[in-house]
Length: 212
Image 1 (cartoon, rainbow, N blue to C red):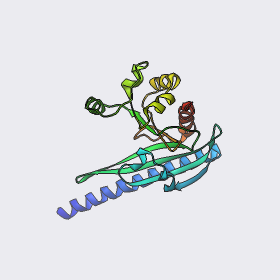
Image 2 (tube, helix red, strand yellow):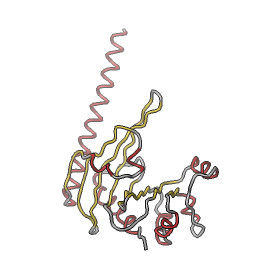
Image 3 (cartoon, rainbow, N blue to C red):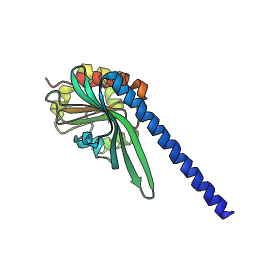
Image 4 (cartoon, rainbow, N blue to C red):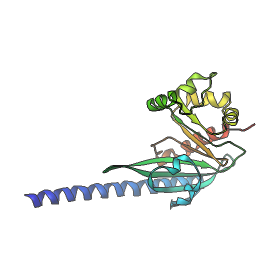
């Protein structure tokens, strides 16, 4: 009985691994076709793109950049890819996966990190954790956590147009490092068929960021 139980568990695990492999294979082919349709180059994996100093790329371990598309959109060089990393807590681990668009340096922008604000962020903020708020747009300040060393320069970038757009389009994470901009929705991957639309949304956000 014990042997049969062990065999059943092994078989179930094997099937789960095979199913995940098949899904990854299908996604890779879908992203390859999307890249071809957009006129982008494609690589199944290229971890070099993770060399940017974005906070999102410094999390966890086993960091990977998969289904990497490289090209231009709106006249700007961009790399669109599936980013994944693993967080381990005790005996448990969880792998995070998200689609990221990285726009190469487009102008003199200050380094910053923007993401959805959660309950624990609000508690931390009350204890002194930095969160750059805007009195003129309380909706933005309510839904987003914005951090960075040069607050004055960051406030110039987040003008009324940027604040209004992000107040309406919630759930985005935007990070700037060395003038390059990363745009993503944390822990969400776009469907291959939606890659052009997702990239267009990312471009709209990145194009609104200006340092006057």
